[in-house]
Image (cartoon, rainbow, N blue to C red):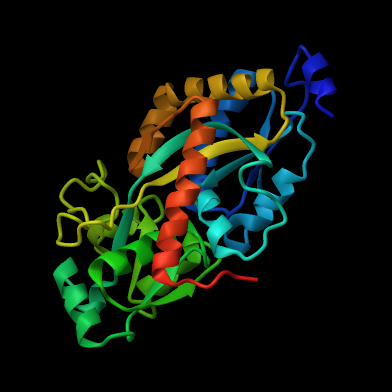
Length: 308
C-alpha cells in the first residue's frame, strides 16, 4: 500500500484526514487546528480534522492504526498515547509497532484547578482536606487511562492521599463539572481553563509540569508547593500509520516545523499557555517507547486495574 504515496511526487494531491482522538474543544483539538490551518496553506491541500473521541483516545488510535499508510491519514494525539498500553488489558493495535512518530508539537502544563466555592486557596488547603477525609475527595479526568488521569494518579502517589477518579469524555465536560463544584479538582490542560482562571471562575493551585507555565507564571509547580516527585510532562504530537513512506513522514515533519515558526501559531500558542516542542521522527519514536515504560511503572504503583 506504500507504493502509491512513494510514486506520488506531488504529495499531497488530495485532502489529508487528521484524526484527533478527543472531542472538539479539547486541548488536543485546539492545538491540532492551530497547526493544520497553517499546514493547509503551506501544503496546498486541506488538512481536515476528524474528532473521534471516546475510550481515552483509543477509538481514534484504532482508526489510524488500521488506515492505509499512504500519508492521507495522520493523528494528532496527546501523551495519553503512552498511557493506554498499561491501562487497557487489550488494545486493537500495538502502540509502538502500528504507529510512526512525526514529531511532538507542543509541551503543555496541566493546571490543578478547583472551584472557588470549595474554599481551597492553596495546594496545602486541598491536601489538608484530602487527608482529613481519606477517600472522600474526587477528581476529574478526560477519561480513564488518559494523560490527565495519570497526572492525577502520579500526584496522589507523591502526595500520599486518596481520591476517586471521575472520568469524562474530554476536558470540556470535566471543566463544566469542576466549575459546578460537583468535582473537587482537575489536572486540566491550561488551554480550556485559562479564560476561567483569569476571570476568577476557577483557581489554579499548582501546575503539574516540571517548570512553571509561561501562561501562569505566578502559579507554583506541585513540587514547589510541597509535593516533589509529582511532575508530569503533558505533550501533543503527530503520528501516522506504521509503514507510511519515510519521505512522507519527513515532509509532514518539515511542515509542522514550518507552521510552528509562523507568527500566527506562536501567538495562538502563547494564548493557550502552550510551548512548541519538536523532535526528529526517530527521536519521537524512541521517546514514546521510553514513556510507555515509565507510565506503566506509575500505573502499577497506583494499583490501577486495566480496563477490559
